[in-house]
Image (cartoon, helix red, strand yellow):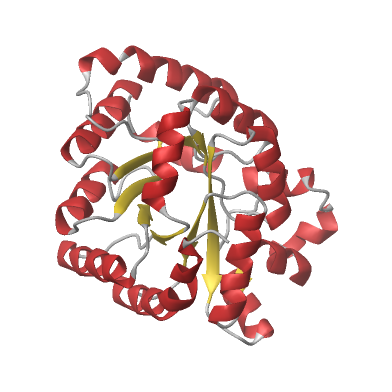
Length: 306
């Protein structure tokens, strides 16, 4: 872990970013969305990847070319979608082409998704450790960016968080309560980056907001790393059944008017997050971008630390 990379990344990312997770949308819609998000004042935009569908480096290249200053990151690049040397090479090419504007988040995904792709699931920690070893051996064959980029691990449990501390520049957990952010910062220590991802529902009525969240289909089956992490925080099986009690939903996800949502993000920042990534559900990329623009005035005010 490089303290210089972490410090420079904090400055470039700012305090609040957005997650753009629509599975399919035309390229022109993506270009329009990233320009609007950039104008709204968000410091970074993050895109996800399954196995197949949108290839994350091609997607990031499209968005980097269509924007001017905003940082683009993967949250996450799936280790089961490409060889470690290809991961290293793809990341290095983007970082070389767009100095200071790229961040690599990578993760091991989930067993069901991997099995459905025709591959054999292996122990996550062992796979990630071996994958990082093989990425590191490919450094000499990849471009050398003038501005080093941060490497972040999707970490929910303590062992993966420790690996993120020791072998990467930080961690990028998702859909966890503020207490998880606090514990993750304690495990990481003060220097590594902590990027926290939050699903946000701009809906003031609690019943409606929770219904939307439950319908979003969060991956909380028994073997899910999310379920295991929540158990580690002390939640019982009864708490987690059926997508979670109202208390679990409220702890994991933000909802309400812009000031309430801003307060939730501030809680994560106060608990040790360096940067909070918000995602909002929507029927299409344009609708999602509309909501992000509406939230921007309240949230980008958090860009300056208290």
